[in-house]
Amino acid sequence: MGHSANGNGSGPLKFLIYGRTGWIGGLLGKICESQGIDYTYGSGRLENRTSLENDIATIKPTHVFNAAGVTGRPNVDWCESHKVETIRTNVVGTLTLADVCRDKGLVMINYATGCIFEYDDKHPLGSGIGFKEEDTPNFTGSYYSKTKAMVEDLLKNYENVCTLRVRMPISSDLNNPRNFITKIARYEKVVNIPNSMTILDELLPISIEMAKRNLTGIWNFTNPGVVSHNEILEMYRDYINPNFTWKNFNLEEQAKVIVAPRSNNEMDGAKLKKEFPELLSIKESLIKYVFKPNQKTTAA
Image 1 (cartoon, rainbow, N blue to C red):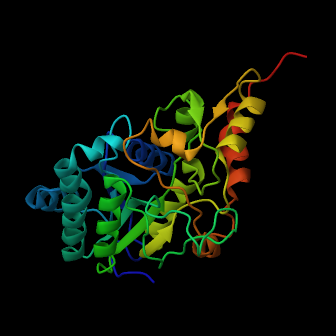
Image 2 (cartoon, one colour):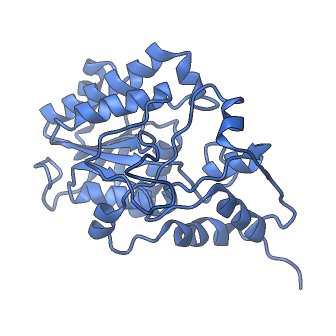
């Protein structure tokens, strides 16, 4: 399961992280600081092989984390009109970093996406049947998802890569505009579909533990189970803002206000849960890591 890397053994860890200005990249640095792990942010451009080789030669990391990538601002619709820029980072850049790491005998932890699947006849909505790590992506409705599916398929050939499929990431920082809860709480209307999601406060420390164990291959990087948009907003109302209200609309109505379709799916979390039995279900994790820490206390 593991790949022989420079980080194997009892020597000190040193992480090289790409994605300093990104949400996940920034959080990784904070976790490393709290755990006393030596880390440096890479300065090289992912699509520039020489700059990556220089980073590794200078920093001499035991593991490399790739949290860089194009998701689009304000959302993935941006990728529909910036296809070359999306390819350059999400495909060319990611593959170049994986290839350089392989040459140097380094495990690369790659934060990917699970938004490459959608409910289908074999995985019906509400059935509890989730997509497994080995399933072939069936959602290419957005160009972002299309590039992510492409690169995941190619990365399967790299025995040094640990691909983590993140979905609809959530953190305890309810002011962060990238936070799924923050997004839907600000929308005028939301769809109401159960989805697998990733609670970063719980799962990012697990990704660091995965690096320590030199785990590789593809992993559904979500909390077990699913949660719907309405269930999240009900928790938001109950814990954060008792006056909060929202409106629903259906997929057909949503399609009129977005450029590219969105992925909705359930991921099978059995593989990650087996490796990390302490992993909480999505609703338990939401309450423990997100809503209780942010709970507004009311005067008696």
